[in-house]
Length: 134
Image (cartoon, rainbow, N blue to C red; front, side):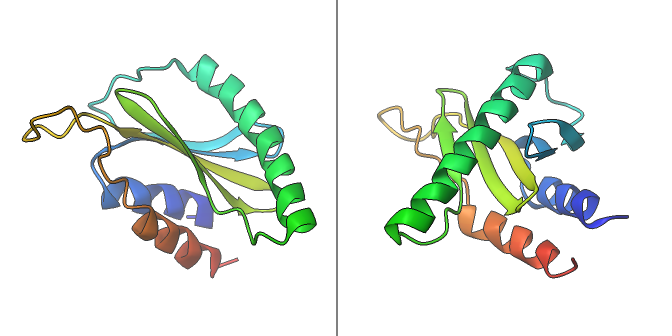
């Protein structure tokens, strides 16, 4: 098993709210993916492919910012919808990790709180761990 497949497996095992995990190249082409079997995708894969192309382009611009403005390395981007969060993380110079996560409101809250934690620290730890096997 290669390191990208290992990454997808570790992410899916780590958190049951992860619905879909994808590795794409810098052109936005899907190279590897893992979808939770009991989940219906809220956004069709054809639309996700379009989003991957946009994300790949956006990451090029984010990298220019970090070079020009000394703000440090761009780590991840989250787009939050009412029912899902979509996260993109650069794995290396040639690959992007794209994750779709449930974003259901916290049930015990009196107000609809869509700020459910994604546990980005743990996700980034898994990415960093897998990157040690280059």
